[in-house]
Image (cartoon, rainbow, N blue to C red; front, top):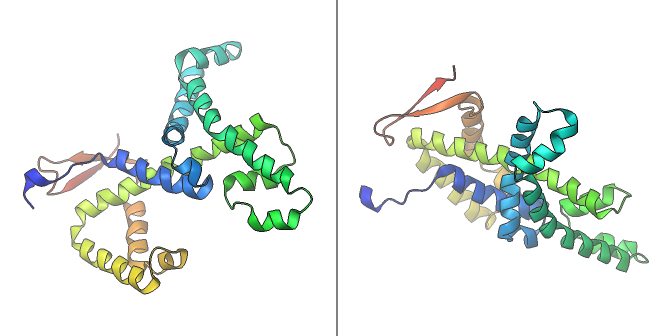
Length: 225
């Protein structure tokens, strides 16, 4: 393929776009997974929260809430999350009350997602408390997976000799299983092995990428000082 026809993408942005929709679909349901505002909250919240913690650690305790509000966008991100999550929580609680006299039916038809798991595991029904519990779930569901996804992509650019074999395994499994299913993923043994080795050898948290003059030729890695 001619080099001028190659479409370039920022790998981390692409990773966040894929992971945030996938994770939100599993954890928060289709409605929130398709909401661009909630997608941005899911991506931004972890960074903003930990950035804020780093900023306020050198201030006295009595001033930290004020500094957090003045020097970080945490309040805005939390409000955006509140705008997205609270209506869904209220709707779910309304359904719960609607089926209060027929709990067996509700158990059969209720959604199987993180929102319902939290509602089922707590007796409290304070909207703000439920909202904060769910918002904090985004910390664990997006960034770690996104960075792992990027690391695997980087390793694939280095070990291109494995791409055809990995692609063929995916094609064969999807054809035999009739598409992407939970069971189909368990048969992707070569891809699973590649991901495991990528995570073992190419740890983003402890190493950095150094691009050579020709980034398509090879990628050299060195330990951080």
